[in-house]
Image 1 (cartoon, one colour):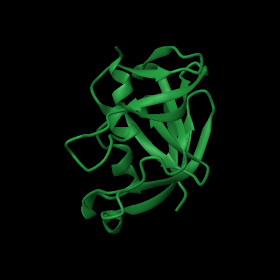
Image 2: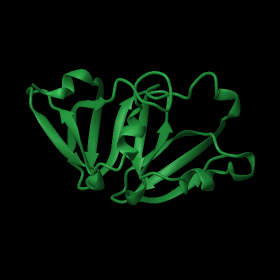
Image 3: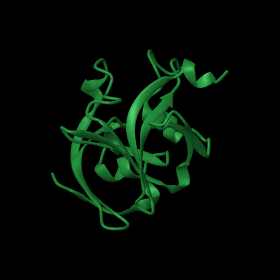
Image 4: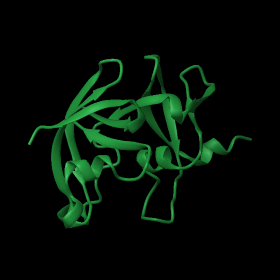
Length: 153
């Protein structure tokens, strides 16, 4: 029996570096030790695993190589900042240009030490992926495929 039944499923579109889109559901752990509730998509993408499963509409599963994923698109509000910690966060507006020409415009919520809370610090933080949000979508962007970023503030 598949252990994916014990995970939380998040509808998403996975955009590969070569432009192929895969629609399906991501699998995040129902519980993690770092905080209450399920694992976030960002936490799943920034784990050291090289692949992650995507349940596809035909009932099958595809394994996506993180190194080939440029962007994961989820619904707006996925993995929002913990309401108890929102006071410690700063919001910056960014325009992200990707290799291949795609552009994403939105905001990032930065929770870093006050002396290191610039947009540049956020972009240079640990992890392969970072989050950019809009009112319509949450984008999890692979730093490897970013051509450049322009702060809009």
